[in-house]
Length: 127
Picture 1 (tube, rainbow, N blue to C red):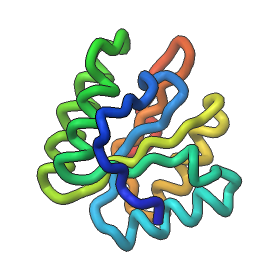
Picture 2 (cartoon, rainbow, N blue to C red):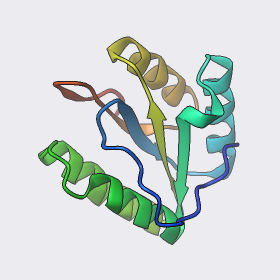
Picture 3 (spheres, helix red, strand yellow):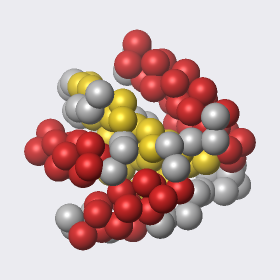
C-alpha cells in the first residue's frame, strides 16, 4: 500500500486533475492501490491520507479552492472519514477517461464517494 502521507507542512495541488474518495480499511486501501498500480498509475500519483496528518493535508489542499460546493463537501466528508479511522485517497488523473478507470477499480475494492475534478467540471464518479 502507499503509506499514508505525514504532514510536514507540504502542499498538495488543488483538486483539479484529481480523483478523490474514501476507503474504509487498510486491507481495502492496499488492494485498491495495488490495482491502481497494475492499471498504470504510479505510486507517486497516489496519495493516501489518514488520521490527523491526513486531515491537515486535506484542509490545505481544499482551502481556497475555487471548486465550490463539491470541494466543500469532499473536505467535510473527508474530515469525517478520517475521524472515523478511514482513508482518503487522492489520485492524479489526466482526464475523464482515467477518472472512470479509477472509479471501476474503486468499486471493486470498497472505494466510495469518489469525485473527479477536471479542468472545467467536477463529477461524482462512484456512489
